Image (cartoon, rainbow, N blue to C red; front, side, top):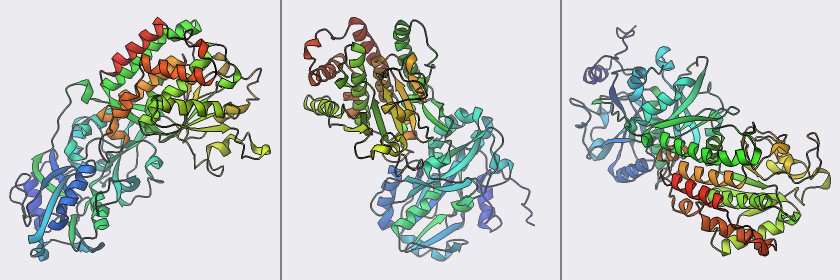
Length: 584
């Protein structure tokens, strides 16, 4: 038994612990929990011929590789990070030769000659924020259980650069649900320690099937009410180095939790305004999913929702219980995370619509589709099979007049290529090979009130059948629902028709322009989203009047254009919404 068996080293200075590591007394001891308040670093050592490429790769994947210091070729110390250090002996390393990992080297002394032509990279580690967690009252289950954190491979691909190309590796910590926001804020304000989490909730979303089946580290047990939270991990350097197949390379054994201890304190830069203060929002219970945005962005979306409340009251006579406050935010967050979206247009121009409300259904579909396209989503408009040609004509004309950059795909439901006996099978439409685990869409947006006469809640017909199939990986939003539609349930229901669609498009704009949400959405991989197209797709009086004119032209109702010009109320709502959106 080692004489240090019961010592946590939490109150030790890093210099003194490094001396013990150098002497070989702590070589297999994880550094988690040591030297509280001080930074720890992952170390990667590569031939200088690969150094510039690796630095660029790190800059494109800052979550996994927050750069702390790049050494000069052959430099064995890290002057900005530690005094009295020798990188050859102050860490525990793995050796990589030509894409193969060799047995771990106790030290790198035997490679002193090779290291004269190598560059050392020091990147941040999540162990560095553990002291801040404890100070903020966030429990660390792995420290309580004297274990390393669980470390997992994921399906998240790093942004590749030249020969460096791999998937992100994450560390997982169980966090009590009522401490999620605190944990997120603490780590958001420590960017050199991997920063904020990149996923909160169901691990299957990022390609992890079983939290008991770790790739590295230890299996940590949750306490009741805990939620799994995932941070980018420095272990990502292992597959990154392997992908480049250097003639020789070294990296700290992050898989064993053994990292380089720095003399510098963990950088903690607390936000002083709402734009830099994260707000965590649960958007789904099954599967359990959370999203995040700044307090400022969340506040603007809530204001957008409040703007349409008077319209809803006027239309319904009271606030109906179909809509719940906060639904606009949850719907927009869910849509922001979706890649493939089906906009289901209930109102069809072929049904001889006679009211402005029915035209507004098509306006809503057009506005939402335009914003989703501008945000880079794969968008399909689904409509009754008798209406497909009309909607395709509308799509083409919207491109011709400059409202859209490209025409959206239009699919009929039921589809003509489905055998007549199965034509009303929504599962076949929504999934690959009728497999609920392989959805074609991440989100359905239902727009418009049902136009089908006298149906019972047990005999839902046509396109509304799509919303009777409840698959956990397909979320749904209902826009323009009225009381007769309440048997058609959606995960998020927003009333007031076209007003709701306008609010939703601007909510999406606000959230995607928020740096905190953008980083979380892209898992801290790649560059921030270019918002030019989305900004151009934002609603305006002129833009939405143009969309309405296209809808009327393609349905041979151009004579109604003057009659259906926007009212003063509509113009006022659009102006107020745009004024809110620009605040982000």
